[in-house]
Every structure is written in structure tokens, then in C-alpha cells.
Image 1 (cartoon, helix red, strand yellow):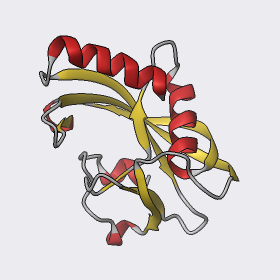
Image 2 (cartoon, rainbow, N blue to C red; image 1 turned 180 degrees about the vertical axis):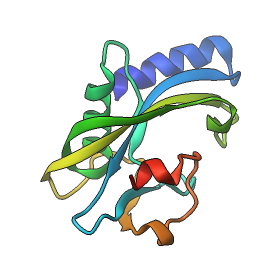
Image 3 (cartoon, rainbow, N blue to C red; image 1 turned 60 degrees about the horizontal axis):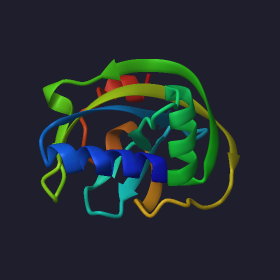
Image 4 (spheres, rainbow, N blue to C red; image 1 turned 90 degrees about the vertical axis):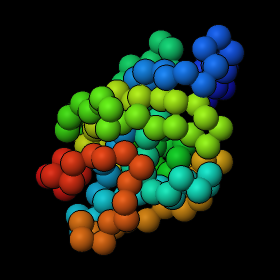
Length: 148
């Protein structure tokens, strides 16, 4: 993630907190019972799908595999694209004032292996949720895409 952090740090040095369009990916991962995997952010931002920005030179498929591994410890294979989301509803202002508008490619993913732990300090906890037990998410993905 250091390449992306340095890239974003450089951009932020040029534009400050102004709005930045950010190509991103997110993963829909289900357990055998059909529950959805969510990540509780360590920063206190609440629950989200395993997700992140696409690094320079990286394909969206490579990005979702990397992000899920870093944030969950799972090795996954993206199987199909569930949708591409963006616009005003996908704007977010971080506690430090940085404004982003995500353009998110949402992938359905199959778990290949569980490494047992995550390596990313962004993750506080992981949990699978049934459709009717889901907490609010930071970004408004349509529930129909998450449980299709």
C-alpha cells in the first residue's frame, strides 16, 4: 500500500483537502450460509465492505485481491462484477477534512483460502452479517447488489 499512500500523499500535497475522484474496488464475500462479510474500520468510521483504492499500474481485479488479503487475511478470486457505483452518494469526507468521491467497481468474490489474520491496521474486526442484521455502511451500496 506504500505506493498508493505516497501517490495520494503527493496528490494531497498539491490539492489539499479538495475533492478527489478515486477509482476504487469493493468485495462482496459470502459465507456458506449466505451472510455478507463486513469490516469494522479501526478509525471509527463504522462498517464497510472490504475495499480500497486502485494503485497506479494495478488492474481492478488485482486491487480487489490485494485489498481483501490485506484487510481480511482471505485469499479470494473475483468471479464477476456486480456493478460500478459513484456520484454524489459516494462522496465521503474523512475526519481530517480530505474529500473523496469513490468510483467503485463492486466484485463478487470466492474465498480460496483463509490465512487466519489480516495485515492492515485499518481493520478493527470482521464479521459476517445476514441481510436483515446488517449495520449501516459508510457508502450506500444497494442491498440487492450485496445479496443477489
